[in-house]
Image 1: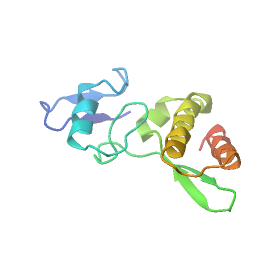
Image 2: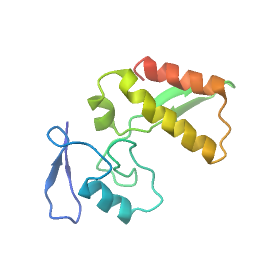
Image 3: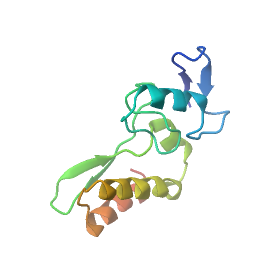
Image 4: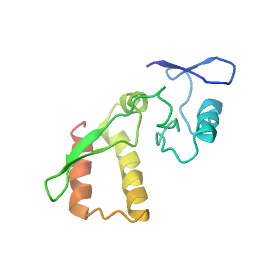
Length: 121
């Protein structure tokens, strides 16, 4: 796990290995406030607009054969959830978010994504 240097909040490191990961960390809140509208990791809440976290993309094909990438988790959170079953809820939440925003995402496409998650993608 890596330490993330907090920006503008005293310079202290956030050590993912020794502190709980939640959306409630001061660093995650601070950075989301500085980058409104940016998506974020579904577990730690670090925004994608801040390059202190790497995105973990899970690749899958939709019914029409087009390959897509889904990234509800940053790389550190993805790695810390050791088993694919522990990651599924974050992908389910992402699919719900897509659908609530009007994105057409079929049950077959969802199945293909969940199969990629189960295979460790």
